[in-house]
Image (cartoon, rainbow, N blue to C red; front, top):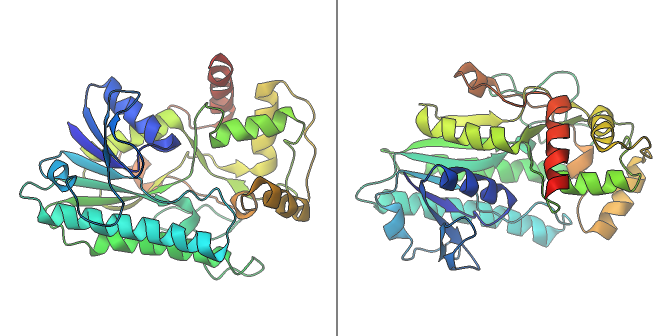
Length: 317
């Protein structure tokens, strides 16, 4: 297949590129900053994420497009950063829609990155695509958390509004992708845990939704081949409270102590780390309803199996 991946130079993009290149597929990555050949033999083309360009010719005749473009959420949620998160996601999705609409031979499938953050902060029951509660008006949470949900909704709406009748469209409501590299979410969690900071946060009742990198790549490949449309949750079937998530990680790392942290401590620490406390304080209890209904089988459905495997590979890297 010829697969186009806008925004593929980040951590998640590299997971997919390696997966598809190992299977001998032709991968073209649209990047704001790079051009040439990537580390896995993928072709890198420049784009600005909002205006038409020569990359339109590569989308015409492609077998699939997997759009990952968007400003990283690992930042302070200032007014300007939130605006950039919104604009980078919506603008890139709209221009991809324009490219598909203009193609003589449009790709038959368009997978569009979205986020599990679209669901409500909740503890009582898991969110799937059928029974899930969309967030934005939960009581007792910071007002600005609602804007993260608005970004997700606008992101998905931009895909659905695109005039691409010959292209199947899927929104990937993705949980944290766990991959064993130092700069990944998993690598950062391991680094904090090794420093003794891998304890419960704000009591640790909030749920962590996650997916092993191999299951993420396999699920994306599965969706290219199976006739699903609309939102699909990409998350392991076993979300768990944050205190259990970190206890399992400590066990995998052979570390016995993890200091707890109050919510105010996390908010203060986030300032110095130039990130936002929402990423660890919001309860994301998400399960993969439509994916499992369609027959997808996870290789790492439980964190107890995934964490040791990821730790081993992180240590070997």
